[in-house]
Length: 303
Image (cartoon, rainbow, N blue to C red; front, side, top):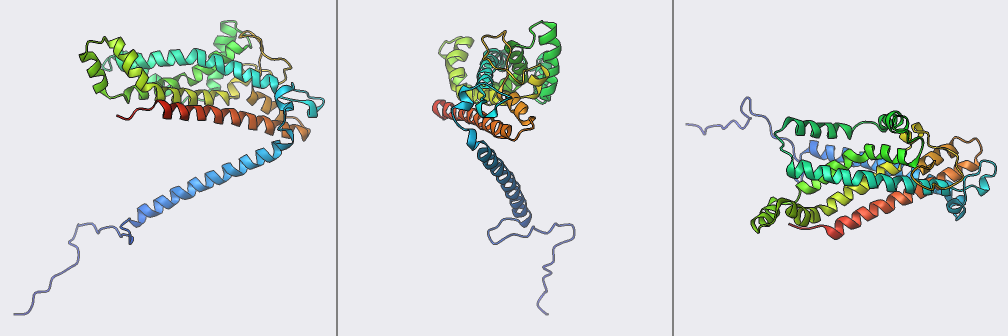
């Protein structure tokens, strides 16, 4: 009898194993990773080129004049963005004052007290998620129709702050809920087992542990609000103003609107002014994000 011949071909219907590289990684996965890295590289390169262009254009006007002078459409060499900077600070300060307490309390209620089986609580959660994806111009229309004209607040800092609060409130709620949800349930159970009430457990255990996530999400939400121009233009934010806001009922302008105004001018000198204002806005945004990172690292807990 001859030696039996073994058929090494794969059986019918059995898929062939994917081809592997020498390091054991499938070729398709490797190509997918290369595609992701290429996409990231394209985005980073274009962002770097844009930042370099803005800084080069802004360099002649990156001095104290841009911080201390008011806008001037006649002599661009004397123009500054003081009113826009102060208006931005006023609007963002009132935005945080309105949206952060409401967002935090809403997140606490939905995570700690609301029954997820109730239909109205599920409806609230769905609406919050949907509101986070609505374009900002829709909030501008809402602010113009209800806050500015319906409530009679007019084209003021208060109107802008309330409109931007509605814009970023869903983001604040979602971020705060995720931070509260990340606190281990054993912390709650241990606190309740020692005799603490539900509110004492939330106030003394859950919220201190959730501070890093809540603070980070809130600052990132306000960072989005500080760069919005479309809803404020719709609300009637002034593009040329030569005084600082004196209160919540004062007229205002902000850096995005001032940048829009300078870009729309025909003279080339205003391009440097707009670029300098962009650099200032970027510095403010980077400072806010750095604060968010510091808060997250300083108050973070390892469970």
